[in-house]
Length: 175
Image 1 (cartoon, rainbow, N blue to C red):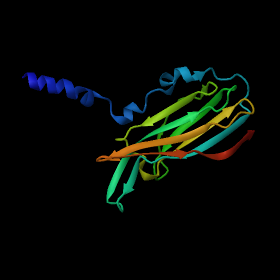
Image 2 (image 1 turned 120 degrees about the vertical axis):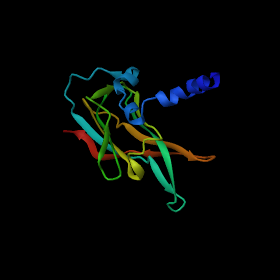
Image 3 (image 1 turned 90 degrees about the vertical axis):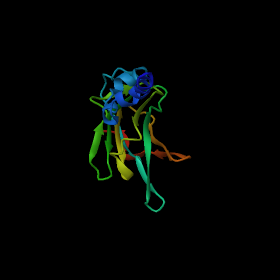
Image 4 (image 1 turned 180 degrees about the vertical axis):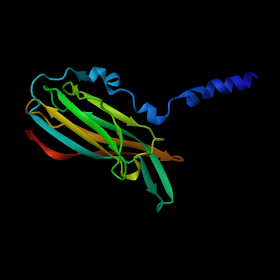
């Protein structure tokens, strides 16, 4: 009986944990409260967007083996003086279907602050061609944000990690 109870106590954190999809719904405002500031009251005169390739799964060994990766998307405010408004963070699968939207409303990042989105290894909804779209804005001239995805995963004793840089989808500038 004691062994059974001990095993149940050890396994409970795994069995009782929320599924990956539910975990991804955690409110960004709560996770990164220290990185956020009040939305600017001034007009958002500058805007831009990024496309960020991400790979929640990668085919290896001539397609006979699939390796799943966790994905961490990071949005860095590269400005030392101005807040950056993040208007949208959306996650898409290989076919271009939106899988997840991570913001209920725009948020403002403090100068040099960062917010991150984590997609766990067992969430393979994105597939081999997953990607993020990140839309941002600011009240005036600002350093363009740095947006990138870090993928980490492995098979057997081999571990892999690589970064995918975001690519601007439109030029930042005045409306």
